[in-house]
Length: 476
Length: 88
Image 1: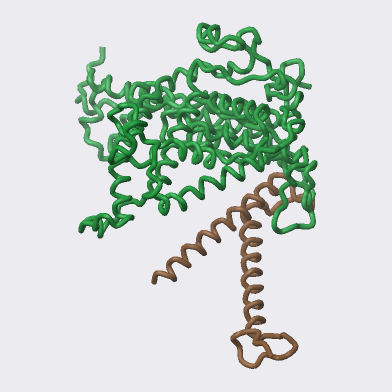
Image 2: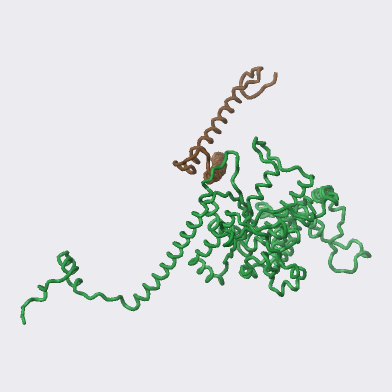
């Protein structure tokens, strides 16, 4: 037994200990035992690290998925294009999500998740946004009616003011549109699109300006009539205590009303002259020309305090949206189409059955049905009613002021001098604007509300196709 | 003898120097804008390595978009300058 008397400090240390001994690190650090941080620190670090790691993983997955789909379509962008040829162009429709003040959300979804693949494949796009509920349906119906008028010869096709040498003819333009495609972002857009389609192909192809029609209707409404100040004919009044609004003492108002009646009478004349489209031209056609292929992109917008958990989930799981958007864009680029699956006709005939079945129509019109429940209750007709009531209650007072000032029966007060109150013409214009907005909102909500079935027509069955993923046996 | 413009003696042949000046300036401006577009969009959209002389689809679409954006921005800047010039 060798007893070697050695101080502990002279025992030769191994490896790292020996290497670090003379580096200037305090020796006590080199002697300590490594140990885990305390329980609380461990909890904190594990929670933070897991959250950050999940976020990083999600964003890396997004980047990977996007790069993967981009690489699959890149070869298309390298094809040469002649100097007079135009690239493929798709039209993107994004309606306003009910309840969201930002009308652009659908198109933001398109720009973030679908557009990168289209850019990689060199497919041009044109974005059309619906500013208010129902705007998109109106726009599409107007476009279809214009097309019907041009086709039946009532209107010449659109001539640009500066004729260029290489202008495509109408047939070429239509062919290019057909080859392009239509992208519908979200179920609400699909509903507005189908409603606009149905209106356009079913209603008369009259050029009816909605503002003019509404102005006519409002002019005959009697809201701007003079209130009776004294009883004019006691035997004619039915004993009603309220002044009958429709009887106007003509002597007072001839001068005031004649300029105001003129703008309302001229639209009626123009309406009558244009609505003389002969009936044989104006009947809705029995077959609809093929529409460009549709791409249905699922989209749900989470708004409101109760959907904050959904928003958080969406923030940490963007890869699902990227995958959905890229898949949709890929199927559009690769042009794999299938016919539109028509809804079950038995369900669409009776409304009672529709509401019972929760709006399920079968086929492609059920696209993204769960998304509807997220905007349930976003608009109630009662809020418009309330706004209407307050406006019409306050209107007679404003009208009286305007008329009194215009006729000179009363001198303007100091405040009215500095801030002149609205005149009668301005009040009419304001009423027209408000009524347009209210009616537009009501009509738009009628189109997209949950439970409302998408509009369908038998003629659509042959005219619509949808982009879809290639089935396994189709891929060559 | 009708005056053709604000300029001094108006020759009978219809050549007005003021109008010619204006036309020359306009041509200068338009060709300046054109040259800017060409150099800017070429730098942004066309990669320096290529194998054939034709534009491919990606470059085509990129150039379409570049020119459209350039004109829009040009118009907006022009309007802003006009309003700034009018107010100042």
